[in-house]
Length: 156
Image (cartoon, rainbow, N blue to C red; front, side, top):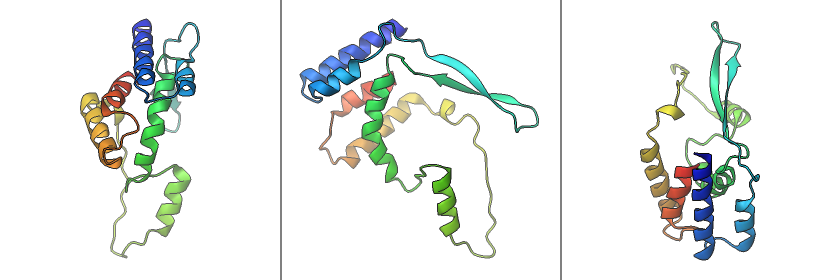
């Protein structure tokens, strides 16, 4: 699967370059991967604060064939994410937000924990939504065509 993904990534980069959607420097940067791309590694991070410690699954994509394509996509999607009403950069951003938030005295504050959020999002539906949002954000003056973004998302 790593070899197949690596080949798809190379074909995508070649198409982006030949259609003038990326320059030579970006093409070279996207091509940089180890001679033998690494198979993504699965491991768990144990939640030791839980009564019954469980492992949170993590897949490390470092040196994988799609690592640079993922960064490339992130470059286009970060500005879109940052303008969303629900965007929070990190814990400090959340704490600053919550400190400034005024609530009525009769308000009941509630917290919740979402279990397995990303593994339960239908992948193709998510890609479709991201692509539509990308088109809306750029008002059809797209940095790269949506088709290529969709392919990148499918590989990432």
